[in-house]
Length: 190
Image (cartoon, rainbow, N blue to C red; front, side, top):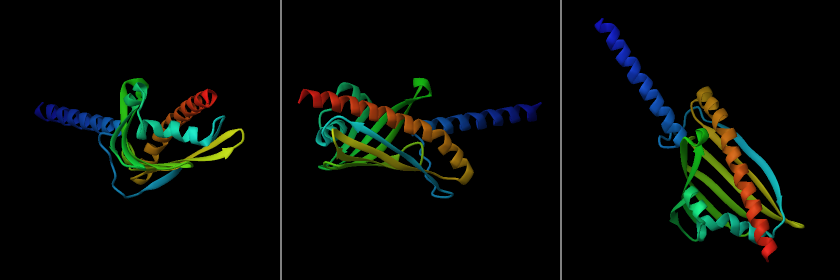
């Protein structure tokens, strides 16, 4: 009987540890960056046309980082450190139907007027680099998003990347739609 209770206790502790580890990975609270068995995969490319001048589009993207963020953006983005062309920012994204929030910490570098680069510092995967490249394209701006997402631990990491990548790209698609909407609204007001 003692052996059975001990086995059940061990299983309960192991299960609790596994659940806590999973929640830590999903929310970005327990980043795992081992550097072994690293596999990379592309993010994007995704191209959108925006009926607004390139400077307006750049300003819309940069505002929550370099300027005064709206209340809605302050709930999503918190600037931790700010320089003239580089910020360190925490991004909060609801996951699991809004029951959990993933927090990523990224550097964001601004090269006015045509490029914004993101590099993951802490999150649910060990490495992500992304860029928004803006080019003038009559009657407005062409925005190209692309990047790379990397995971560790060979097949296990590939499986995790298979779960994370679609959600990551869906979050970016939502952001791009919001950027287009706000830039076009501002361009009409000019």
